[in-house]
Length: 178
Image (cartoon, rainbow, N blue to C red; front, side, top):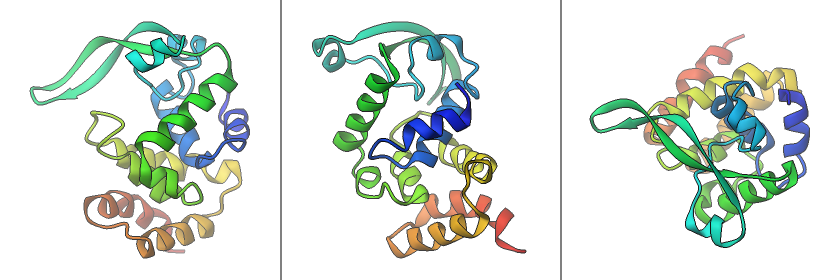
């Protein structure tokens, strides 16, 4: 899988395709994680009882977690998907059930990312990392500097503020001036 092919798949679902792609790039180490790629778990989705009850499979993998005691690696159970379609549908379902800001803003990359912040991952720098990736991969996927700036301004109008605004704004400044 590469970034362009992944983004093309993401366009078929009710998620923000650019944010979804940036998240997959981050979670899989640019699609280099063999366990995540084999199991089509592009977003680091943990295995849950709900997933098992629905007939889903799981696998164990070593992961990095940010804890109160500091960063540590541990083995965790992750959801395994039989196809890309099953993976994307599970991701879309998870977003729709548990991430209302993402669900309500699939048209705005910055609002979608802000809806993940503080909930999806234990990494306190998750939002800044995703923001940087959006700016890195966006142009190669057809997103212009101007469209990303416009989306940022729209996100502010929709209520992006506080730490989330600051985290995204730090990266936006890198493309803001001509």
